[in-house]
Length: 162
Image 1: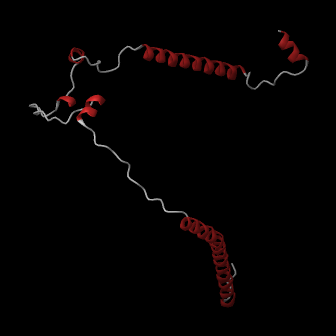
Image 2: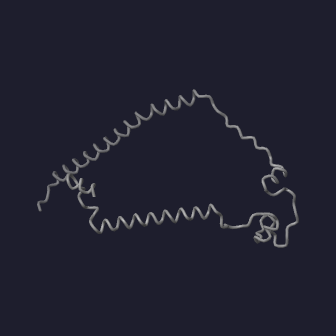
Image 3: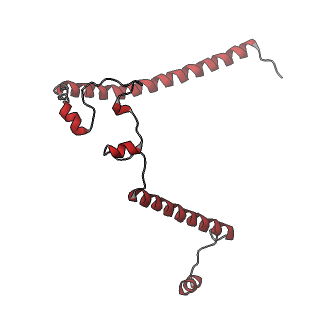
């Protein structure tokens, strides 16, 4: 390995420094060019905003709910009842289905509904069809049918005729 003289080492250091400075200048030029193209767009947008009339947001008028509205919606009225011993009000208490039926309310939880069973049947049918398609694809891959060249000419006519 040849040892470079002090003059050669300083020359190489200056060449490297010049290359770094040129790269920095190019990066700065790119940034300036990007700013020069973006700045007029932003100024135009600002002028558009200043020309447009100011829209003041108005709060939507909300009427307070009355006890009658809550009763119609099936909610809780503002009447205060004495809290039970466990601290839960009646509307938060969970009751068994027998008590709900006595009160004329629908039972809690999913029941055997016609729509639910029909939906479950459709899902099961889709799963079966998907499994059949996957099985057919698997058989075709094993037999090499997916890599077989498509029929052309007389062979295609023979395949069509049976």
